[in-house]
Length: 245
Image (cartoon, rainbow, N blue to C red; front, side):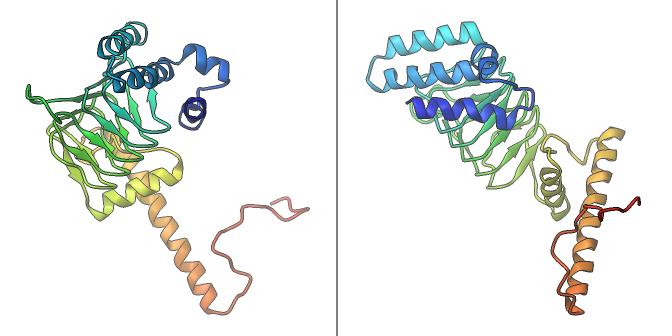
């Protein structure tokens, strides 16, 4: 139990650069509080004490603004960033290392008993305001764009955006996603259909970075073919000692 709580604490440092200290996370992060409350209420729920579990989750919603049904199954290192307005239904299932942002709903589309909420695989990112509805599956490493409405399954490593959500699966878009991750941020919420000039500018920068990276790799492969044993797969940015240029 304590090991799981420690993982939930440490993952905040990995995914939120604003986090400075453990004390700050323990006292000021509503997402962390909501996860802790859920770990406890879920154990109570599994033992058959349904009312105490629901009351604890209700109390957690009151102080955090995040509603997680105690019946929901949540994996390791789950991170809710900001969190206000997040709703996670009873039969939702969330894998390991998932991240969701404020305003996200994992909701149902039926009043029938049984599985009626979505299942998220491992390493899924769900952008702010997204709605994932019904007993659908979101694949491992998938990304859901901000304000998307998802009502169909999303395959592994795919990106879904829009209303209703559509899958971005072209080679160019996949390259953009990979390049963006290598640059240290995720472009999962950006759609190439947007007319926003800033979006187009970001896409241009990502495309240019990917093209330059490919050209550099081609040069390195060519130099290796020439028999230069000193060539490596990476270009060093270190300057020679004593060099002023």
